[in-house]
Length: 619
Image (cartoon, rainbow, N blue to C red):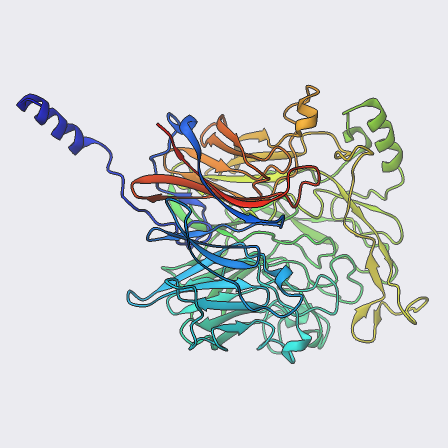
């Protein structure tokens, strides 16, 4: 090479974008604020078409897989099929596996959605949730830390209410870490008797309990009067089951909770039932409540906040506001100033239908944001039923006429199936929202189907014919008829398509930036019915190069790359199974990878198996 060529080559190297050899993805959902955002740019709109599968970690038999691994210093840490694993992030080669020794019957509950990393610069720890336990593992070997808890684990059923054997808490997501504390929440029973949804802080070194925030307030605590006297002794639920996020600078922990037990009958729990169905801002150091907002009063629709909040920074009236955004199964999106709890968009209290089941009670009003618009339908009429075929429409109309249809927030009727929209899987589900700080867009994938349920008598000795809504042991006289999805005889949603959407919300204005049908049924595509939308589970990840990457669509098994600004599909690839987990992206050895978990457990007609699949750019 001559001197001029050498000089030109040097200048090109000096001005070309510098890609780090390694770039970690060490937080569940991308960062402590849960934005699902990556600053990586190697994969972009111009070259995304060159993405191809580069390795696969096959976990064997068919099992539900919702896990998003983390990547630290070239090693990928994740869970699946009852074990924790460490892989070489560039090749997928297994470094170690660890199978927690869970009690009989608990292994099936080991379906963790994420892991957590703690380091003080000298010592590293991998915190993993497995059923009712949190394990502290040495990330170099996968072995439990013997100085943590009880031989390397703590039991979330303990330090709660009564003996551990009387509780049921399962944490399906990652713990949240701040300084030398980690925070837990968890899943509890949906019907009484149920454990309370306490939010707790623990010492990351020892596993000892530091503080507890009671989501069902104890006597003398704020808002205890929103429950019946002594309800704190027996009431359950009000749990932040999807996980928590932390404002590290301010030391504020944000939680979004679900309903109180029983989910679909509230005759035994009068009052607003704080802090069920609420966004909570908690001092991370002390466990003291800073502010709250209850999105559903006295919930009897299972209208949980089904995903963690997201910390965003929004331009409003010419100034930047650090805010927290959250959405629940009603498909409304709420955005609040992190410091004050002030809503960035108006919220009205509107009248809603009364309860009709014996002894049931309903709160007379519910909050309704003016902006953003709801992401899924709130009501369904006979004119909004399936048009897939004339026969399907006729069947749907006849069946629909048998339902009780009182509009949004209608409590389940007694022994009559009652319309629920968006329904019991949302709206939005546990995959959560994604925030792009460049555009100030919030991305949400949602379902748009209809469900029904009814209040029915609980079967059991001595329980028929009682006039009391509550039985000894605090178990309601009533239960519900089931989670009944409204499908036509061929198994498709019996409401009109689209049955799923992907939406970008411009948080500067509260308006939709773009919105598209999301997901397809291959059998319908073959008949010429495209863009129907479908059920979808799992979230997405946005990148600084302007991509939005997401799997989620249940029946077409695709991983997609969209243009973040416009919603244009730039690339997709068929996964071996449904990509019902949230992907992650990272750099290893100078190459950017996208990894997603896929499984065949939710699609009854699709291929069976479980695997993590990695993509990178080809030549």
